[in-house]
Image 1 (cartoon, rainbow, N blue to C red):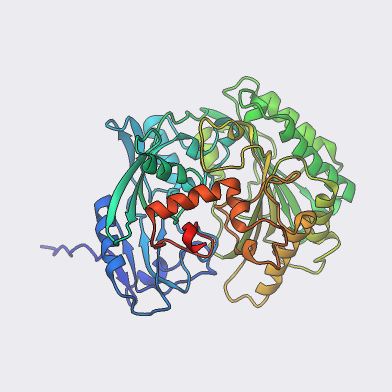
Image 2 (image 1 turned 180 degrees about the vertical axis):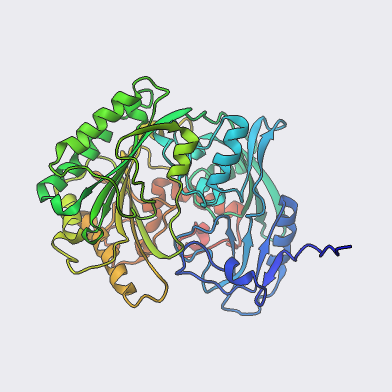
Length: 517
């Protein structure tokens, strides 16, 4: 008779085989050395374990923070920093189901984007309009607003959030599970719900469950394309026309009831050493006008420049190479989602973001042209250096209710990315490239895309960037909190004061109680 071993401990400490994996996340820049990692399996276990953690005396006074991980995709050291004492890993809580008592779909905080697509959609025909990187955890993705290829058609993930359950720490260090609803009669609980509609993860407590109402039905089929152009064929005039055409298309098509207003495009500007510029696009073809919308989009973008489109031959940042989609293909929505469902290799990385309200101006285009290797960084060799430009707006810009996600009149969202392997001696060069490229793009507004200014509207909290707190790189008159949250930050601070008065959940860019700011 085979002896059955007891269930392994859900507290993982140094010396446990699991410790090296669980004390780091997707970004290999950040490797923590916590006293322990606590894997939690239920809301009650979260409550009890958190109550224990806040009563403990740190063994090392330099390590005092308690942090929370869902999918491990925090870009900065907010979860896996040197000062972290305990990491709560909620990934064992990954169920999703219809909750008849709440009349809503329940999604546990440890589920990933791929759980939402591979589990929720087949069972219900519904989906979150969330991100395409499969391993991103919903606990963080949702609370920052959440968006993806369905967002121009259906809006942000938080536009459907009905309720959230959070383990919070009171002034006396007591811990309770709080259920906060959109229609809550208690104003404090309703404010806690609101704070989770774009206020960022890891700010107010440990999220255990989300509930969503009126989730959209994705199209049964979409038209998907992925093509590229060779950098060697570009003149500056072609580059300018490409960015202008891409931006103006989405500026002019902001009605989510039309096929063009549903179309989602991603322009991937690799550094010239990569060899190619890439384009991905998807449109709903349950809409009879979908094929026409894709044809007109490609005519607008590809047809406006002289380089000849070809197949993708190189990786495009975090995106996989899709070498078989130069000719647009009709496929089931879930199949298309799986085709683009990449997270990249686990490497070191640095990221920056920007919301864009109108097509790029000439100075911004000139800066990108120069820093992508045409005038500056000409001897640069890191092929994984990218300015990614996603389409935005449409349904996003018609929110059904008040949320903490304040950027609601943008047409594009940018993500600057650079990747390298750990201990690469050229790390400083890679960081210089992304910092100077970003700063040059927004040189007219102090090196950052100021909120509500001209054609920019701040930064995305789910792409955190500590440089926004550094006067060397943020020379504007706007703080990091304004760049992320616009005028919502004081309201978020009031929620913080009510629900995390001891500032237990903190990092260098967390929402701070007013008395500590």
